[in-house]
Image (cartoon, rainbow, N blue to C red; front, side):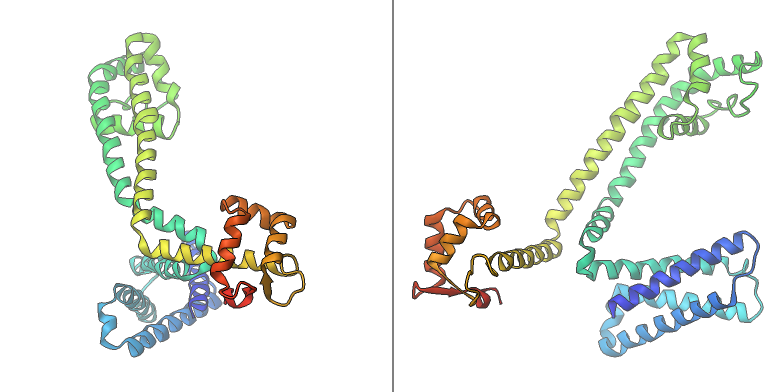
Length: 330
């Protein structure tokens, strides 16, 4: 069911992208796309009522169920407005709510074991959103401090150069440092986006070399200082959140255990278990540790020698004769 739901959401989002592009170009959307979207809406409604039927009143305490209900209500509202003769422009805000359907795709990714890496990326990104917000505020404060200096010292030089025709091919250069907010925008454009740093800074520095302290100081402190610090804090916050995420850690341990069992089963089949009877004797186990390179490397990584292997075998097989590894892995 989760796979089907994820597939329907992908189709719906793809059609939403097509619809947005066509409306931006002033072209009507194809009829088949509208019908497919209504089919997706019908699927959402069936799934919503099914969860309500199975979960009963408990679904009212589910945040995900209320998100799904809001998406369905917004989609139904859009269809009603269109049938009443409203134009696409009048329901533009309602159409934007279709973007919220991507939350259903996020839940599919979280439940799918084959998308483990993508799930990690999404979980880590969600855990550092607050850190990103504070980082943006910190960068804004730093650029504001430099903007205060730039408006006081750099703006008069820029105005003088503009009067002399230095910025004749740049309409925005005269206003680059005319106010704090405009100066913030200029620093954002030149330092963070890396756009046209020299078109403003170089003429000013040539006229008054001391202004290099302002431009270079802002560049070094924000780009090489604060932004690198932000990256370090984001990584630290993601790692801290991951250590606290018990559910994900447990799922990762289960996944690693399953992969290890598959790998050991591959070692034992036809190699360590030479006769293929599904049982291992101590002699077969020791011989495999000496002759099978993959099994030998695995034991070396786990720091298990022949003595440890023999003790482990005694623990697994009380009779000290043979160990049924098929049963042990089941």
